[in-house]
Amino acid sequence: MTKALITGGAGFIGSHLAEKLLEKGDEVTVIDDLSTGSFQNIAHLEGHARFRYVIDTILNENAMADLVGECDKVYHLAAAVGVEYVIDNILKSLQINIRGTEIVLEQANVGKKKVILFSTSEVYGKSNALPFKEDQDRLMGPTIIHRWGYAVTKALDEILALAYHREKKLPVVIVRCFNTCGPRQTGQYGMVLPRFVRQALLGHPVMVYGDGKQTRCFTSVFDVVDAVIALGEEEKAVGSIFNIGSDHEISIHDLAKRVIELSGSSSEIEFLPYEKAYEEGFEDMRRRVPDLSRIHDTIGYEPKVDLDSLISSVIHYFKK
Ligand code: UDP
Image 1 (cartoon, rainbow, N blue to C red):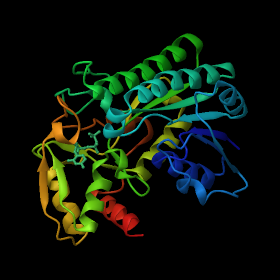
Image 2 (cartoon, rainbow, N blue to C red; image 1 turned 135 degrees about the horizontal axis):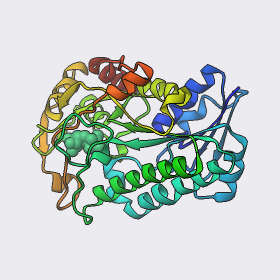
Image 3 (spheres, rainbow, N blue to C red; image 1 turned 90 degrees about the vertical axis):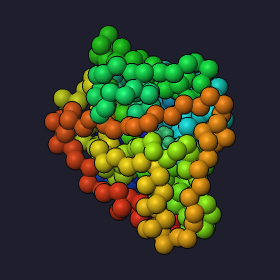
Image 4 (cartoon, rainbow, N blue to C red; image 1 turned 30 degrees about the vertical axis):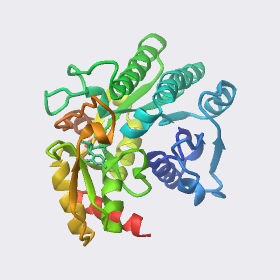
């Protein structure tokens, strides 16, 4: 039986991962400081014989030494999430992403525990070289724009993990998630799909930022969790970086229309300039599409949940 530690396990993705690992028969420990995660996400797992949780920060080195020491594998998700959250809490975000990951890797290295590090498509920045391949150049904007500070810390996390792998033979697998959505994701930290669904269900205007022609590819959390578990079990994946996502591209304006239609809402769409939505000088990427060949070749990954089903699952969750 594998003993898994999930940092950030009370978060949106972490809690789905905990559930899936328990189904698989693993023993699961979650550490979460509930800064953006929520106890509600794991409340239904309380009492499960193979589940336990610790409410603490990964910056607590003593707690991390114990927890990492007791596990076989670490899924490291504890990090700042959401463009809006990062802009509003930039210092805390940088600290958790830099020092937090350093502590996870230091402790994992003590007993050579495998680390599955959650990174993000933000590391590609505003590159126009689509679709994004794991080893291509990245394009960052100026340091005074907080979004890029966040992207740099996630890239630094990857670089640190790769250095531990190379010099210390620490088994690491890095995943770059592309716009992951699904039940339990909150719109509170900026994510577009839960926000649109909430606005549509309340009959409020659906607020599209910028001209709405920017595109994204939305992935179901269930596809992400299955892929992460498979990569964590695949020997060939060690020491590599993998995009996880869908390559079905949609503009944010079209997403708004689809959400309104599928939720049977009478909401109107309104456009809000970026500087009003975020901060002066905010920069967005026009398109973001992953190249999925590496993950496909390594574990046969294909996204299974289509966009309409994904939107419907979020609508269903918000109605409940
Ligand atoms: N967005 C929007 N309305 C919102 C929240 C976000 O139009 O209420 C836009 C945002 O500007 C971006 C896209 O939707 O172009 C995706 O935003 P999100 O924060 O979900 O993820 P990102 O891809 O920016 O990390």
